Image (tube, rainbow, N blue to C red; front, side, top):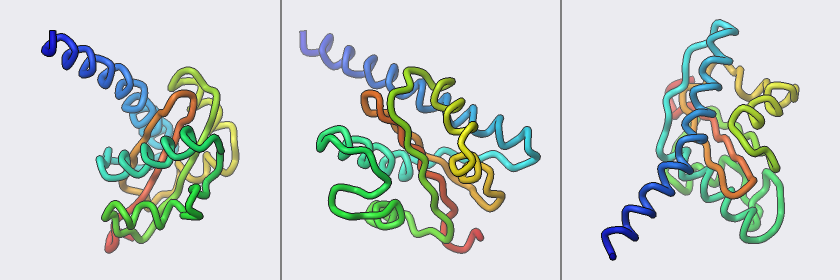
Length: 142
């Protein structure tokens, strides 16, 4: 019985990870169409994105500023990501990776974040209907 429960949790985490990884892939396709280098998935930036998504979901708000007043830069530093460039996109209500990418690519500010040439890393999280994308370049990479 315990093995089955662990397996079901594993399957649920895979199902949750799939749309998140798809957003990273779609972002790289979007960048490639503009002649830009692909981004590497960063587990650290995924953790930053996930923590902010959970914070917003748990406390019932939607903002780039955390419930503790933190910026994306401060949240990244807390997780050990030392950066020279950092950006964040958030969205709420989209059901699929295609929907969230359509929203972000149609928005001038979000699109601009994804198309910064000096970016190297990406982390994406989805918590319920909240999507968070954190983009960055580690110190020394700018």
